[in-house]
Image (tube, rainbow, N blue to C red):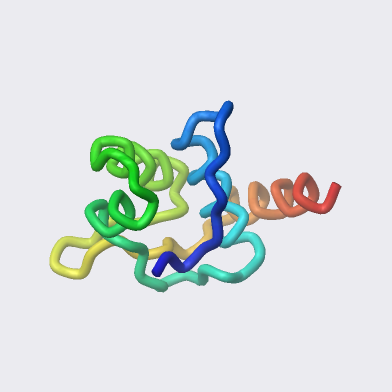
Length: 97
């Protein structure tokens, strides 16, 4: 079971939809710093997507500093930095509209 909700739709890239759903879950507080994020394998199986696509999703979220990959532990939700906190506020405003 995924720790965020998503209903994939046609027309938009799966990667963008999942990154948006995870970001929205972080903004809404569904995912908090330190929470475990599903492995690439679990993500690909739950969403029925290619494992390469799941890896790309995790990579994008890691680049955006929303996730951290810790050897021996796995992928977790990263603590929010100042810049990320501003992004979170901006995204929260976008979601409210």
